[in-house]
Length: 162
Image 1 (cartoon, rainbow, N blue to C red):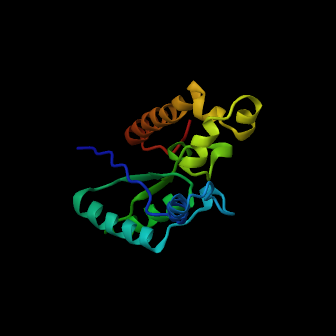
Image 2: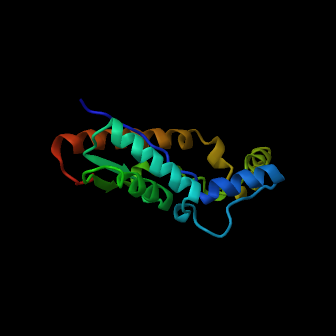
Image 3: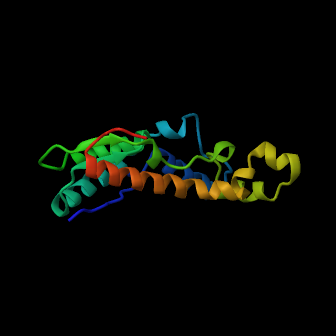
């Protein structure tokens, strides 16, 4: 029997900064690091370790697909160490987190305030991302594309990406 198991990354430093910013009423939490370079916290590493122990008891995996984001790679490599056999780790851009452009690193309060802006101010802040109908479809297209690719990969064993 085949299984598709989806695992979210462990707690990241950015998750902690966002929660702190929300408590403090701040509008921004991004700091000085790109979203894709944000590492896990010590708690996130422990979560990954425990996830790996559980998955190793419950499943047999042939391969793991992971986005190129630091926190996802850390999560995968940590939980894969819990398996008594080697599992192929496949970097796959299409399973990465969606990007918010200029809204990246803003708390919900800042995003809500931004959606009330209008005209040129809204475009300057990048709020078109929150209202453009095609923007909502992009993650689903990427997910559908990835699932199709994963099915093809499973049947052919090829690492070729189209």
